Image 1 (tube, rainbow over the protein chains, first blue to last red):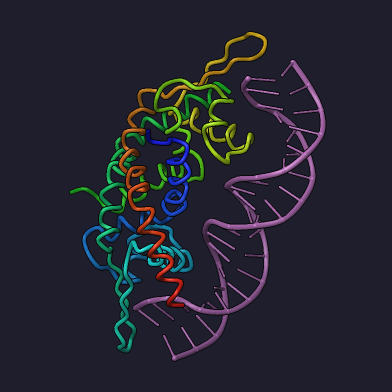
Image 2: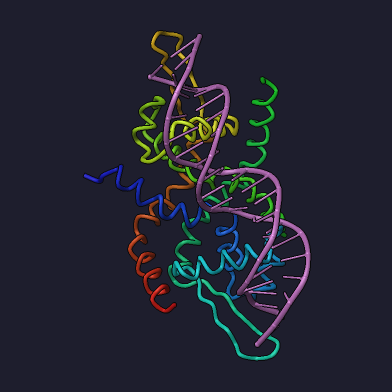
Length: 117
Length: 117
DNA sequence: CAGGATCCCAATGGATACTG
DNA sequence: CAGTATCCATTGGGATCCTG
């Protein structure tokens, strides 16, 4: 009785969260607890200042993480997964493990495919 | 001893596969066995002919699915997950389940966030 | 330190028309 | 049926400069 079509539509919404270049890496970077802006920027290779900000805002809006500002000089801002964010992290863990496990096979498949053409 | 930074870098490659608008939905649409082009187009709401073709080619190149052409008139092309594709499907299943389970919470979080602004 | 603002280019992806 | 080809609007995202 589960309407597959509807599930696919609803899945769309979450793929719009997760299916971007950086969100999953940000969620992953927060897996061991709160992190500061600069720490995240350092931990996530290749992310620009702008995209880190944009991604963090989006995840905050979606209730995946919280942003806590401490009013001191210099500024101190902490990002931390919400309970829902932690469940997302758990749901994505298999995918990230899969990626590490199959990277070599994917490279081989690509080389094989490209050599045929 | 696991180098976290390296894992993140390698994860990048798979997010380039999975972190797009359609790939996960295509993989999902093939979960119950082979499907034809038109069937996929019908099952995946909102996908255009072009994006279905592009996505299928990419997944074929990555070794996630196979494309089988039967030389008959009219043409008959079947797409099917490879063994690796099936493991990907399994790895992404928790994420898709998460999406369905948390959609309402996400909507609420967004409404809440937007109302503050 | 943690961004905001702006500029700009490249890639994404939709619509449409055509075809073996 | 299962695409290919083309055009085009939108968006993603990097670089740079500025600030409380």
